[in-house]
Image (cartoon, rainbow, N blue to C red; front, side, top):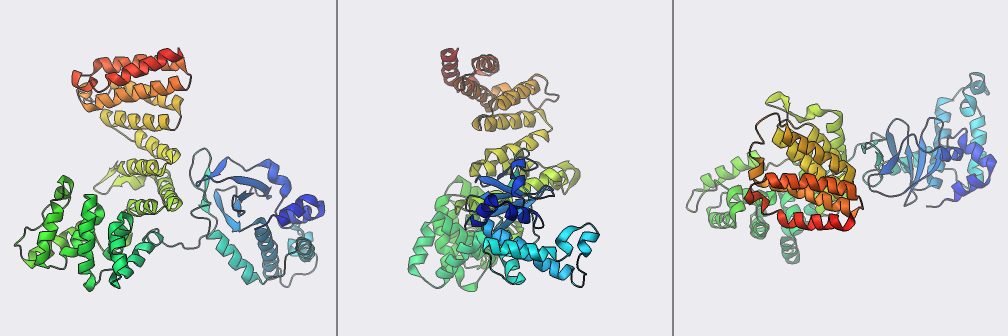
Length: 504
């Protein structure tokens, strides 16, 4: 991980020329920048150090890795350092030439205008540059292995995004990657093995840790074994403390599938933990039911909501578990790729039962997932598309309200102001009757609250004229609310008005 080669190229014009041609690593193109604004999804720094004659750009990342981005929207790590990447490029260019140019006569490349890549000039350039940079001779297979390892490190930490549209660049390579669930579930599989081995320390440590417990239950869901009943009972009792979770349902189903009627008391006790568990585990057989009734309930729930195939789980199952384990970039990249696919092909939102109708719930879920990751840029990207696809006046106002809140939280005050202006336009001319009662319900309170919150933010940003204008609109909305809806807003309204007076 050094910049030895890059320093030598910057100090020696001859070496820089050789790197630029025939190896297409031109440090003189660094000043040109990339063809578009870009950034890493992980937020790390990027330093442009070279370009090539196709519009591609070489970036050094924070850890010294060299990222290459072409001009067509693909990018990937091509070396753990500039030195390694250059060694790979120089060595593989020679290796490719040996295969492609075998049997060609000397000088054939120059005659057809393709330059020294098809003649012995490449070998001379390779020898001179390799010697000057201190690179040893390595077999092509070894260099290819280094390149493969580098490319496979691109995700999740070095995914490049368009700086304007915020979509991800495609990978440079087409190597298969493990499905998301495999790295996410790895620690759960390890814990499940410890539990099956009867490790008493693991038994309590896993059961008392909410994340480890959830992962162990998921591992048991997809790797079912006859001897798991006792450990499943133990995990079930502890998972009930988290109220109604998907993993609680998994645990209840796995226990129920054994058909041991002595578990009916435990299952019903878990069901009665609180209101949410009572709803989520509804239909459970009461104590005194037969083993077959218990198995039937568990099988039906298993077929409908649980299952034994990890590929059937929604993406959110794995991104949530990734986030909870601190695998933030793994979750972020998976969600960005999913959003990219929807943006490029909205037919993915079509309902199976109505080919012309769209279900926008996946977009709202993505917006929330990105919010939980702290990525408001991607959350807004999902939310804005969600907003654009709403049909009823109520849904359009609700979507605009959420969008304005995100924009305000992200410091995009002008955009948030425009979103609320559009919201008020829908209130004034809804086009349907879905908003006929908005003033008398909590929805009206939420609309007024967001107006006052944004007004306060505008005042804090020393934008008194904009703050006064929005305060007027907020007060008008407050005046339309029912007494019950308005009662929860007046204190915020007074504090906001006072703040606006301070900056006016």
